[in-house]
Amino acid sequence: MAFQIPRGTQDILPGDSEKWQYVEQVARELCSRYGYREIRTPIFEHTELFLRGVGDTTDIVQKEMYTFEDKGGRALTLRPEGTAPVVRAFVEHKLYGSPNQPLKLYYSGPMFRYERPEAGRFRQFVQFGVEAIGSSDPAMDAEVMALAMHIYEALGLKRIRLVINSLGDLDSRRAHREALVRHFSGRIDELCADCQARLETNPLRILDCKKDRDHELMATAPSILDYLNDESRAYFEKVKHYLAMLGLPFVIDARLVRGLDYYNHTTFEIMSEAEGFGAAATLCGGGRYNGLVEEIGGPEMPGIGFALSIERLLAALEAEGVELPTDEGLDCYVAALGERAKEEAVRLVYQLRRAGLRVDQDYVGRKLKAQLKAADRLKAAFVVMIGDEELDKQIATVKEMASGEQTNVPFGELVSFFTERTRREGE
Image (cartoon, rainbow, N blue to C red):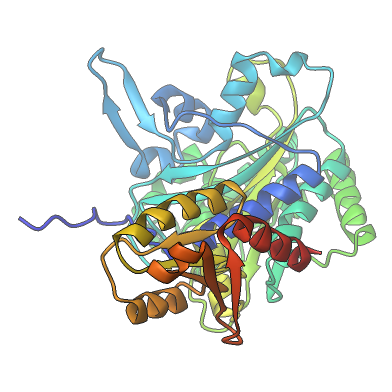
């Protein structure tokens, strides 16, 4: 029987995995520069966490979660998103007691949603996200958005757009909710079954519907911006002011509501405008979630964060033709002829690796010509050739692959020979 990968998942093979490592490392380094520290949470959590944290009226909870019962009869769910687990850890470990507030965290790892697989959308996907918990300062909102944009720009993306909105506070959303119910009630039967169900439970989710996004009722729906009270409007103005101070262009979209119930005040997305990128143009999404910490059992503490898709990030880089500097090649390839030389090669390869060099050798008994071809395929800068003659003289032949120049180097000086060149190249 030939086994195949489950639908909606993917294998990340050598050649591609280096790209993943590179973009994740860039994101980690920038997070460190902004003062964010890594947190790691379990891949599965108690289902109730997502029912309360994400919202039981969301598509994620109603349709997309991978939920199972363990042998103890407990309902567990593979995490569909990262914010609720991070906030759970924040509460459980009483991190709200830390003197360093706000607490600024980042995470990276697989998430799971039962969705229809398509380009840029998988059932197992990887998110990189940040959460800043403990500040209600609009400057914190600007910092989080600036960090997200910085990650994309540092990787070479140019055709991206920051889109923002405000969902306001509880009073603003309540007034907007009533307006939405009045707007959709008379013609709700023209919309899909999901929208009809959401009319009473969560009418804001109607604006996030993918099926009816082009219906005329969506275009004429009341704007949340018209229902912001004075406090919410002032907060949004400060967010926009800070973004302008940072020189970050943005577009306001009053229909940007995001798909999670915990958002309030600032919401945002970063979109790709690269030609041919496809319908999945949203690269990153996030927003403020004041009240979520309290909902999960902690004290009343505000928070804001974002999550970006690594898969969509790589697709956007490809769409813009950005080449990542990931294929470094080997510093040295050791080519051995004969059993005596093979033993010396094993010892030398180990010594060079311990000295910090990227080194490999032949393990399948190739002839010298084939070993040189292998070294070329592996992009080795140098090849050390060892045969009986070299062993007798204790002097290796070192070939620089780019120029073809050959140098004789005593065995005892090979490590210093390569480490010195590596040091000079790194200066």
